[in-house]
Length: 111
Image 1 (cartoon, rainbow, N blue to C red):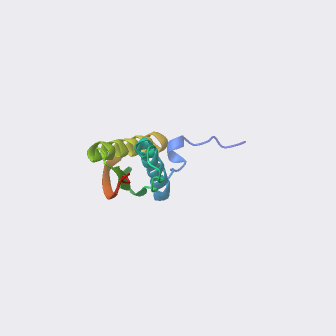
Image 2: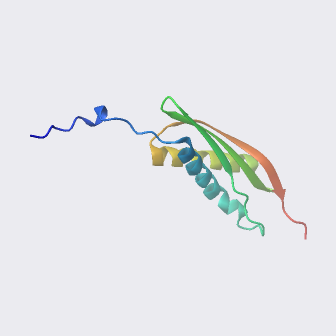
């Protein structure tokens, strides 16, 4: 006779590593910035993300470099929203805060 499987809640738990949150957030950030860099001859610098998972929630810090001139505030909001949405969608973990830090502005080349 085989024992019946226990309910799902008592079998264990799933834990997602911080590096998974970082990779998801960095990819979402790069995707959100791609349209702003399309008209530039130089490639977009890769964004950097850090993530901290505590108490069932995640906090993100996103480091980006932006093309200039641009609407810095609008791009920062787009990056933040994209990263939060994608992390929550793919992991099911709520994002309680996301900080966007603009490390550098890349001026358009003069012609």
